[in-house]
Length: 590
Image 1: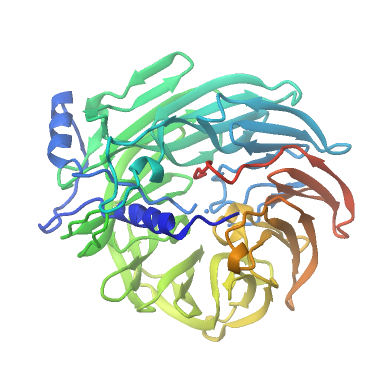
Image 2: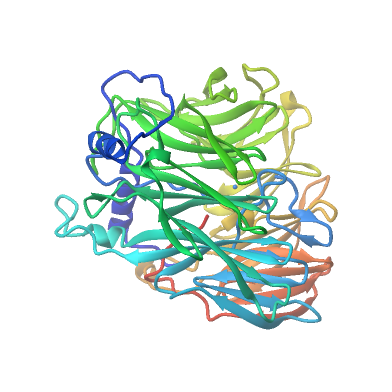
């Protein structure tokens, strides 16, 4: 993919980072409690006295394990057992469901690859599919319905003739759940619609219930517009008296909405809270956690670096089917990297954060179910930042990075965590996963994709068993999206997409070329990492892989390829799309 010119990238980065400074106060933090408004007028007065002085962006969750494989076909690689996550590719063991813009392609795999049909939602200019779920014979499609916004008249960055509409040209009006009966994949049938206004933040699915999280600015065109819930019967305003808020919060910018929808019986509920922009979402089987960054004792502007301490506000929503209760709120120092920074076990929330002050600092916080901090560990790898974390039982595996990659093992068996061991190696792992023969790390070294295998059985004497470094400049979706990782413990098989940089520098650097990529197939054995093969997709970008029985499928933005396991003999391929345009189309997927 051709990189954007340097100036717009810098401006986009500045704009996004400015959105992190969403709450600022010169007064000491007050004790927080959750309550509800008694009247619509009370809600509007609170927003008018606590609203942001400027538009604020939001920090995206970067874009969440056990083995994805179960039974005769693989499933989405998820963070928590029993909590499904949306993905752009799903399978029921026979049909492939592949999301592309506003379409879902249904592809039959037996006896050979063939186009079945597709479902299309709205216009490709306004609708973007964020992810898919499968529940029995039901296909669940999460999509955003965007409205194009020209931005405020004359709005531009100081000293620059670049309007806000150039930097942030879309405004999401609603996020929806459309359910199809795909018991006959040749004739998908609409069953149910649900949705709520706002930008998509994330979603999860437990059993037959989908939890959809969105965020909506408190102001629209200068007016306070309350969120609306959508169904097949129309829309309904969320009552102001049902909206939760924290009276001690010095400023708010968003309605954060959660919609719970049972895809089988159609029952649903929704919850809305006034807060700052949402950041990271983590869910266990019984709790949904939302985090919001908050600067204490600071002020900020678009090109102003906030001074003060960064803390993270955490909301815990207790869930039981479609029943949801906003049950606790707390805060910790620093900010989490992504969803893997949080983990719930035995009535405790464990959370790893990085603080950015005169020197970066990393901490681990232990909170009870009221989100009261009961223990912590500070001063981990001062001057470095967290690049990846992974919890396994009472241990936390953490990678920090500045010039080398320190891997820490932290004991969480007591409320006060203790570092058990540390290992330094070149590069950095941005994703960690326990596999049959050790701890797997996927990351980078010197501009190339790196896969590492660690022996962590003795925390005081950790060692790197082996590494696999891709030749040439490359990157992988698996470095930042765990759903791009396919691991099969029975075969010791690891498959990740790898895309190679097509640029050679010099005058040709800005010449656009389609990248080429592969599904890299590795064996992660007791003695190390070996390449089994690489399935090439020319002029396309491999995004996902999965298996059905003894057939491995690699999926790019144009093609599905089938190869036998373990020999990787080609069994056929199918072009299902012309591919995506790399200009003028950008979205963030959950």
